[in-house]
Image (cartoon, rainbow, N blue to C red; front, side):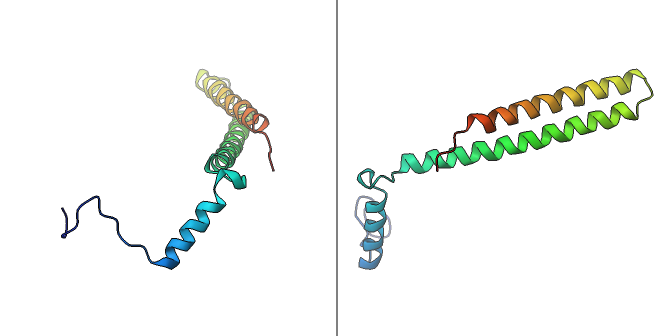
Length: 108
């Protein structure tokens, strides 16, 4: 019991809020074709697209950095390791980002 009310008691909702809430529920009901499952599917597709774009851009930056290192290298072991590591990471990010973008179907 809290403030003189039991936990199971309902709190009265003003009629204008109740009508708005009911109209939102009617719009999101499966019989209208716009349900929460469809909304979450569109949300996950947008997240995949955003993440795929970010990975692709990181991959491009990594590949450009590897190219700059390759041009400016003196041939020491440390330079070669940096080229290999940044090139491989850039390639992995780029390929996975493109894969996410290709794999996400556009349902508009």
